[in-house]
Amino acid sequence: MKRAALLCVIALAVPAAALGSGPRITVLAASSLTNAFPAISSAPRYSFAGSDQLAFQIEQGAQADVFAAASPKYPEALYAKKLVYEPVVFATNRLVVIVPSKNPAHIGSVYDLKRHGVRVVLGAVGVPIGDYTRKVLAKLGLNAVLKNVVSDEPDVRSIVAKVALGEADAGFVYVTDVLSANGKVATVTIPARGQPTVKYEIAVIRSTKHLAAAQTFVREVLSRNGRGKLRLFGFGLP
Image (cartoon, rainbow, N blue to C red; front, top):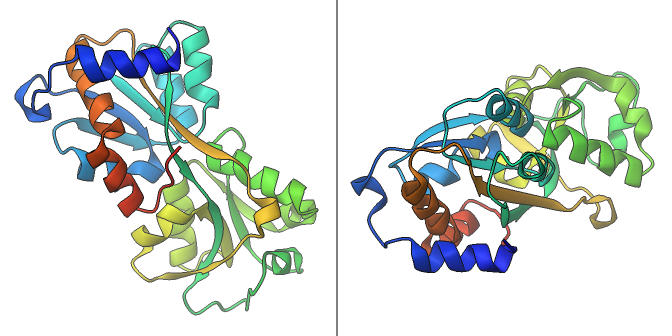
Protein backbone atom coordinates (compact mmCIF):
# COMPACT_ATOMS: atom_id res chain seq x y z
CA MET A 1 0.00 0.00 0.00
CA LYS A 2 1.37 3.42 -0.98
CA ARG A 3 1.80 6.15 1.64
CA ALA A 4 -1.00 8.29 0.15
CA ALA A 5 -3.33 5.30 0.26
CA LEU A 6 -2.33 4.56 3.85
CA LEU A 7 -3.23 8.11 4.85
CA CYS A 8 -6.65 7.63 3.26
CA VAL A 9 -7.16 4.37 5.15
CA ILE A 10 -6.27 6.07 8.42
CA ALA A 11 -8.40 9.10 7.70
CA LEU A 12 -11.48 7.35 6.31
CA ALA A 13 -11.64 3.76 7.55
CA VAL A 14 -11.07 4.39 11.24
CA PRO A 15 -14.02 5.62 13.33
CA ALA A 16 -13.56 9.11 14.74
CA ALA A 17 -13.81 7.83 18.33
CA ALA A 18 -12.04 9.47 21.22
CA LEU A 19 -8.63 7.97 21.80
CA GLY A 20 -9.43 7.27 25.42
CA SER A 21 -12.64 5.33 24.70
CA GLY A 22 -11.05 2.11 23.40
CA PRO A 23 -8.31 -0.26 24.58
CA ARG A 24 -5.17 1.36 25.92
CA ILE A 25 -2.45 0.97 23.32
CA THR A 26 1.32 0.98 23.80
CA VAL A 27 3.32 3.45 21.73
CA LEU A 28 7.09 3.01 21.36
CA ALA A 29 8.51 6.43 20.50
CA ALA A 30 11.84 8.21 20.11
CA SER A 31 13.05 10.06 23.21
CA SER A 32 12.75 13.41 21.46
CA LEU A 33 8.96 12.91 21.38
CA THR A 34 8.72 12.64 25.18
CA ASN A 35 6.95 15.97 25.59
CA ALA A 36 5.06 16.20 22.31
CA PHE A 37 3.24 12.86 22.15
CA PRO A 38 1.53 13.03 25.57
CA ALA A 39 0.36 16.53 24.60
CA ILE A 40 -1.27 15.06 21.49
CA SER A 41 -2.91 12.25 23.47
CA SER A 42 -2.61 11.12 27.08
CA ALA A 43 -4.52 7.91 26.37
CA PRO A 44 -1.70 5.55 25.23
CA ARG A 45 0.95 3.94 27.39
CA TYR A 46 4.25 5.41 26.15
CA SER A 47 7.74 3.94 26.14
CA PHE A 48 10.40 6.47 25.10
CA ALA A 49 13.95 5.43 24.16
CA GLY A 50 16.44 5.48 21.31
CA SER A 51 14.79 4.47 18.03
CA ASP A 52 17.33 1.69 17.53
CA GLN A 53 16.51 0.18 20.95
CA LEU A 54 12.79 0.30 20.24
CA ALA A 55 13.21 -1.30 16.82
CA PHE A 56 15.20 -4.11 18.45
CA GLN A 57 12.40 -4.64 20.97
CA ILE A 58 9.89 -4.98 18.13
CA GLU A 59 12.13 -7.49 16.38
CA GLN A 60 12.27 -9.46 19.63
CA GLY A 61 8.50 -9.61 19.80
CA ALA A 62 7.71 -6.84 22.27
CA GLN A 63 3.95 -6.35 22.68
CA ALA A 64 3.26 -2.86 21.35
CA ASP A 65 0.94 -1.18 18.89
CA VAL A 66 2.65 1.84 17.30
CA PHE A 67 6.28 2.73 16.57
CA ALA A 68 7.44 6.33 16.04
CA ALA A 69 11.10 6.85 15.20
CA ALA A 70 13.41 9.85 14.77
CA SER A 71 14.74 8.39 11.51
CA PRO A 72 13.22 6.50 8.57
CA LYS A 73 15.97 3.89 8.92
CA TYR A 74 14.33 1.68 11.53
CA PRO A 75 10.67 1.83 10.49
CA GLU A 76 11.67 1.13 6.89
CA ALA A 77 13.79 -1.85 7.97
CA LEU A 78 10.91 -3.24 10.03
CA TYR A 79 8.54 -2.69 7.12
CA ALA A 80 10.87 -4.68 4.86
CA LYS A 81 10.65 -7.51 7.40
CA LYS A 82 6.84 -7.21 7.48
CA LEU A 83 6.87 -6.33 11.18
CA VAL A 84 5.08 -2.99 10.74
CA TYR A 85 2.60 -1.55 8.25
CA GLU A 86 4.00 1.02 5.83
CA PRO A 87 5.52 3.98 7.73
CA VAL A 88 4.47 7.58 7.18
CA VAL A 89 6.60 10.71 7.71
CA PHE A 90 4.91 12.92 10.30
CA ALA A 91 7.53 15.45 11.45
CA THR A 92 10.95 16.93 10.79
CA ASN A 93 13.60 18.39 13.07
CA ARG A 94 16.93 20.26 13.16
CA LEU A 95 20.14 19.80 15.13
CA VAL A 96 21.79 22.32 17.43
CA VAL A 97 24.77 22.29 19.74
CA ILE A 98 23.96 22.79 23.40
CA VAL A 99 26.33 24.01 26.12
CA PRO A 100 25.80 24.51 29.87
CA SER A 101 24.03 27.81 30.53
CA LYS A 102 27.23 29.36 31.93
CA ASN A 103 29.24 27.98 28.98
CA PRO A 104 32.52 27.43 30.92
CA ALA A 105 34.38 26.30 27.77
CA HIS A 106 33.35 29.50 25.95
CA ILE A 107 31.90 27.70 22.95
CA GLY A 108 30.71 30.28 20.42
CA SER A 109 30.76 28.23 17.25
CA VAL A 110 30.50 24.60 16.24
CA TYR A 111 34.11 24.95 15.09
CA ASP A 112 35.20 25.58 18.69
CA LEU A 113 34.38 21.95 19.47
CA LYS A 114 37.64 20.76 17.92
CA ARG A 115 39.73 22.74 20.44
CA HIS A 116 41.92 20.61 22.66
CA GLY A 117 40.31 19.85 26.00
CA VAL A 118 36.71 20.51 25.01
CA ARG A 119 34.48 17.69 26.29
CA VAL A 120 31.84 16.67 23.77
CA VAL A 121 29.02 14.19 24.24
CA LEU A 122 27.30 12.54 21.25
CA GLY A 123 24.62 9.99 20.56
CA ALA A 124 26.04 6.52 19.99
CA VAL A 125 26.47 5.14 16.49
CA GLY A 126 23.16 3.62 15.39
CA VAL A 127 21.07 6.01 17.47
CA PRO A 128 19.48 8.53 15.07
CA ILE A 129 20.88 11.59 16.88
CA GLY A 130 24.33 9.99 16.81
CA ASP A 131 24.14 9.19 13.11
CA TYR A 132 22.79 12.64 12.25
CA THR A 133 25.56 14.26 14.30
CA ARG A 134 28.26 12.38 12.44
CA LYS A 135 26.74 13.56 9.16
CA VAL A 136 26.97 17.15 10.45
CA LEU A 137 30.63 16.71 11.37
CA ALA A 138 31.43 15.17 7.98
CA LYS A 139 29.61 17.92 6.06
CA LEU A 140 31.45 20.66 7.97
CA GLY A 141 34.87 18.97 7.86
CA LEU A 142 34.85 18.59 11.63
CA ASN A 143 35.64 14.90 12.11
CA ALA A 144 38.46 16.06 14.43
CA VAL A 145 35.71 16.75 16.99
CA LEU A 146 35.37 12.99 17.46
CA LYS A 147 38.71 13.04 19.32
CA ASN A 148 37.04 15.17 22.01
CA VAL A 149 34.10 12.84 22.60
CA VAL A 150 33.92 11.79 26.25
CA SER A 151 30.67 9.83 26.06
CA ASP A 152 28.40 8.13 23.51
CA GLU A 153 24.83 8.18 24.80
CA PRO A 154 21.91 5.81 24.07
CA ASP A 155 19.36 8.59 23.43
CA VAL A 156 19.08 12.34 23.08
CA ARG A 157 17.67 12.97 26.56
CA SER A 158 20.84 11.50 28.06
CA ILE A 159 22.89 14.02 26.06
CA VAL A 160 20.78 16.89 27.37
CA ALA A 161 21.20 15.66 30.94
CA LYS A 162 25.00 15.34 30.70
CA VAL A 163 25.39 18.87 29.34
CA ALA A 164 22.86 20.41 31.74
CA LEU A 165 24.75 18.85 34.67
CA GLY A 166 28.08 20.18 33.40
CA GLU A 167 29.49 16.72 32.75
CA ALA A 168 30.30 17.83 29.20
CA ASP A 169 31.07 21.16 27.55
CA ALA A 170 28.84 20.58 24.56
CA GLY A 171 26.54 18.08 22.89
CA PHE A 172 24.50 17.69 19.72
CA VAL A 173 20.73 17.41 20.15
CA TYR A 174 17.51 18.22 18.30
CA VAL A 175 16.29 21.79 18.63
CA THR A 176 13.09 20.39 20.17
CA ASP A 177 15.06 18.99 23.13
CA VAL A 178 16.27 22.37 24.33
CA LEU A 179 12.91 23.00 26.01
CA SER A 180 13.34 19.94 28.23
CA ALA A 181 16.48 21.44 29.80
CA ASN A 182 14.46 24.17 31.55
CA GLY A 183 17.00 26.93 30.90
CA LYS A 184 20.01 24.90 32.02
CA VAL A 185 21.57 24.93 28.55
CA ALA A 186 22.27 27.49 25.84
CA THR A 187 22.38 26.79 22.12
CA VAL A 188 24.95 27.26 19.39
CA THR A 189 23.63 27.26 15.83
CA ILE A 190 24.86 24.75 13.27
CA PRO A 191 25.42 26.28 9.81
CA ALA A 192 22.64 25.45 7.36
CA ARG A 193 25.07 23.68 5.03
CA GLY A 194 25.81 21.20 7.81
CA GLN A 195 22.21 20.33 8.66
CA PRO A 196 21.15 16.77 7.84
CA THR A 197 17.65 15.88 6.68
CA VAL A 198 15.84 14.73 9.82
CA LYS A 199 12.53 12.95 9.25
CA TYR A 200 10.33 11.15 11.77
CA GLU A 201 8.24 8.18 10.71
CA ILE A 202 5.33 6.43 12.41
CA ALA A 203 3.90 2.98 11.75
CA VAL A 204 1.38 0.58 13.21
CA ILE A 205 3.02 -2.66 14.41
CA ARG A 206 1.61 -5.68 12.60
CA SER A 207 1.37 -7.81 15.74
CA THR A 208 -0.96 -5.30 17.41
CA LYS A 209 -4.09 -6.72 18.98
CA HIS A 210 -5.72 -3.30 18.81
CA LEU A 211 -5.48 -2.36 15.15
CA ALA A 212 -8.32 0.17 15.08
CA ALA A 213 -7.05 1.97 18.20
CA ALA A 214 -3.50 2.02 16.84
CA GLN A 215 -4.72 3.47 13.54
CA THR A 216 -6.76 6.06 15.45
CA PHE A 217 -3.66 7.21 17.31
CA VAL A 218 -1.69 7.54 14.05
CA ARG A 219 -4.58 9.50 12.59
CA GLU A 220 -4.50 11.85 15.59
CA VAL A 221 -0.76 12.46 15.15
CA LEU A 222 -1.39 13.32 11.49
CA SER A 223 -4.44 15.46 12.24
CA ARG A 224 -4.60 19.23 12.41
CA ASN A 225 -4.48 19.00 16.21
CA GLY A 226 -1.51 16.65 16.17
CA ARG A 227 0.39 18.76 13.68
CA GLY A 228 -0.33 21.87 15.72
CA LYS A 229 1.03 20.25 18.88
CA LEU A 230 4.14 19.06 17.06
CA ARG A 231 4.76 22.58 15.77
CA LEU A 232 4.20 23.96 19.29
CA PHE A 233 7.03 21.75 20.55
CA GLY A 234 9.37 22.93 17.81
CA PHE A 235 9.01 20.18 15.21
CA GLY A 236 8.79 20.91 11.53
CA LEU A 237 6.07 19.41 9.37
CA PRO A 238 6.60 17.42 6.17
